[in-house]
Image (cartoon, rainbow, N blue to C red; front, side, top):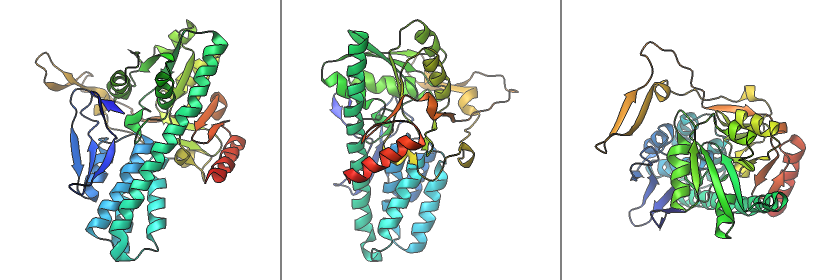
Length: 365
């Protein structure tokens, strides 16, 4: 997708310099910077510090992390050490573990001297597949947008999204935004309500940024405004992404998603979750088996932005003696989700629906 009219992906292999490069998302929207990942520790730090973020992109970064590890030391021992480091970097998004499992499974039977070269091809394949998945999600999701336009006899459809499930959270296209981009390309008029998504403001800082660069009309709203807009009939459709979908259809996503789903249900507004299959946790149907990441209190107590001189400043907004609780994710029961938009089609967010997804995915292989 585009930034300032130029096409980018979120992570790529620079063949000229034999380096892995990423967009540093912690600097957006005020500064666009490309940084290099030279070794496994760089990859781990990029994931931990959220220079790359979003479940599919974390998976891609982990795949490239294994490549960088094999470039340093292709031994079985170092593969295990590096895999553990990556898995520990962020615990909630299942795509990270999916990527590590795929890389380990494929490299297991590869001669050590060939692992460096093979791991690069595997990482590139993993990222290319994610890009293709997201493109397909857009095709199926566009059909939903077109159907609602007809059913409601709309000139412009108003879509609400939460956090950033755009192309910046994947390799390209995005999950929740992919249907929007596909629809816009066909001339469908869309306006997007963008939740700011406190405390890291990924909606305000990233989703609005990328939508504006793609020419998609959008308006940033505070996290508590969505229900008000739904009551007033100003939201026609909600689409979010997910960091993990449990095998019973329950959705784990950015904190605040649950409240949006409740408001959508109360106001009879379709609430869809867009995911590639790599986001499904096939072995887990209980949130108690999932580690919900709790992040630093500084994300709540401080805010970062541009001052009047154009300099980025970080300031405290809470009293020093305050206590904070900062869980990064919550769970939305599958019964509150209208459907899962996947690379294979649209499925019910339930155990039965996911079994149908698995069958479709197997048939497409």
